[in-house]
Length: 303
Image (cartoon, rainbow, N blue to C red):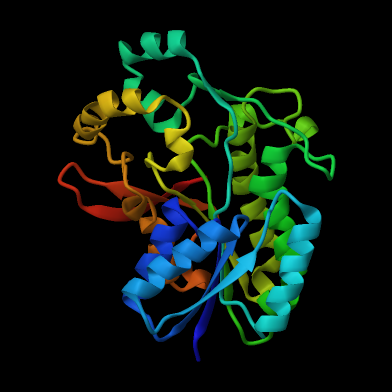
């Protein structure tokens, strides 16, 4: 029986790289669904995948995780299409209007914390959030709540007798406990809503395992490392990235978290696809890592 895999945020970056890797391993045994907000980009991604894998089963689904109505409509469509869902990759995410603290960057680049600064963005990045039409903070809604609502709406095809299903969250090295406050879980009052939402997804994954493991549904969290994607490129002007890239390649000799490419960043997502979820550590975050010689591998660390 074909495995049904749904990936949110699949039209570019790590999501698209994951889809390519999944199809490269097993073109015939997968039903792949790209759940995306922008259908023009989704169609382009599907065409690219089918060019490489002409016999693949690749469907599209319109999904905007920042919109409650979009999530509910998408979930209804999924339940009409599929009797079960084997893998749900919760990958969609935004970091709108990131602001770069030049003073903190210049201070950090000459400190012993330079690698941590580059790898996590801690201390040098802030974001300006907005409010959705559902009166939710946009980053909270897109990165966390929309995915949680999707899971709850898809329970009938995720939790079935005799079936094992897996939720896999794309978290971040920017998921800092210090950014999250349970009394302000939407992060309305802070300046690091992205970091807060990613740390909250780590916590939510733990809670989902407690609630759903007995029903055959398992949740895991991954960290892609420092990856150059559209989200990353939006932080700084392009000429600065051009200047910094040689520095990043040099730093990768000393740290394994600089995965840099979406293909490498998707390593942990791909690795989890090949594991039995009931044998995984529910309290671990699985990191995509790259050695100084370019070898990619996955390693668990505590959430």
